[in-house]
Length: 305
Image (cartoon, rainbow, N blue to C red; front, side, top):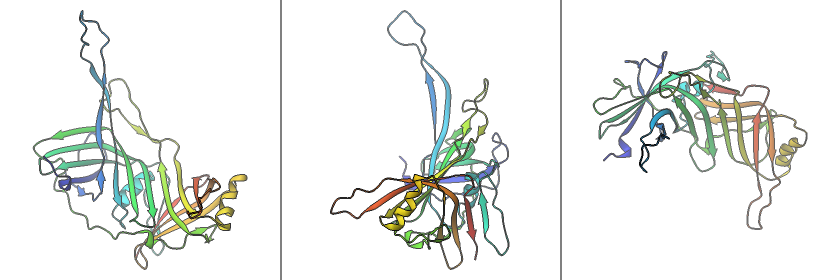
């Protein structure tokens, strides 16, 4: 039997989804690694003279799952870039920046149950989705939705060759959030929660003769959205009333790790929706606001020390 505490996840970037790198592996800190493989068993419709169904055949499969972690400073920059389908623009004297692009990054991810020596390898993995969750009473969390193209397993050795430990960065919480801006000025209202999501809507192209899990993974139109829970008042009403005309607003959310180190989520144009709250007499009046990023790419800034 295996203990959940003995599961190690390791990762390495690939240039070819069919070639497993022998060097460059690093351990990926995480809360949970939900990567798994599932196969499609197609039942046979052939009659065999009896009432027992004939055996079916495996005709397809899929590799997917979420990797959840605390959004530590610097620890997940490669996966953040992969979710944006781009490279970080590294600057001197100004923040590094990340915007939506068309550069696909693929990874091999090992999931090892070390106490029972059962080892799994997922190859050709793409970050299809990203979610950053910020609440008042928890650490800032990040979830990477993964899709893969290949799978192997072993009961002898890990596929991750000598993975290096990573110095984990600082964590952040709801208390780490700086002044949230709307159209460049303080939003002026209590924000109870904030989320930011990218869905690349990736699809696996399957061709006749491809491997079990398909061929290339192609990203479609990026669906970028999120939500906020706000205290209800004039400022939150003024924000949501934009849904009557479809007018866009700009939002900016800083996540501080130290005096200088921080990530800043910048959303130059979003359209918002939200319902008028209907609280009971014993509840605070809050409004759930959903937003969709339009026209201009979001920007993730990384401010360095």
